[in-house]
Structure formats: C-alpha cells, structure tokens
Image: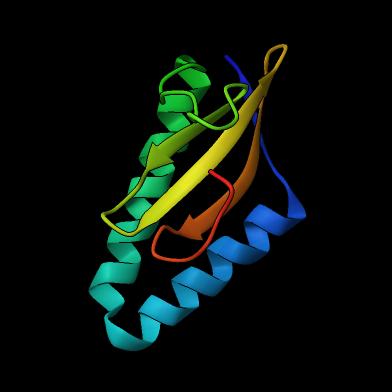
Length: 93
C-alpha cells in the first residue's frame, strides 16, 4: 500500500478550510473530513486515482467538494499531498 504524506502547507490549508466551514456547519465539516479520509484511503490503493493537472502534468488534482480540491504528486510509492484549496481562489492548478 502506498504511503500518503501531507506537506505542512497542505495540512495548514486543510485545517483552515475545515475551521472556516465548522463555523457555518458542523455537519458539513464532518462530511468534508469523511470525504478526505475516503480519498486518502483510495489514494493508498490507487495512486493515480485523480487526473493530472492540465498546467502541471506531474501534479494530480482531486475534487473533494464543488469548491474544495486537493493536489498531490506521486513520488515512487509515496503520495505527497501538496495543497488543499478552495477552487474559487487563484491557484496554480
């Protein structure tokens, strides 16, 4: 099984997003946490689960919700989570 590693930036960004949504809806924050857990579990099994970014083909982008995405890079058998971001903001992916 592949190892999933969150960068400090990705972890901080995810926690900030989770905290933001927690203030509006605890249920949504819990659902987001559940979706991320399922995605990480699936990435451990299928490291190329999500499609490559059009701009950066070595980077893969997964959609967690309509507005929240996660990007990662496969390095040998490890999956490096680079960022979790609100797709309504400016981003490189």
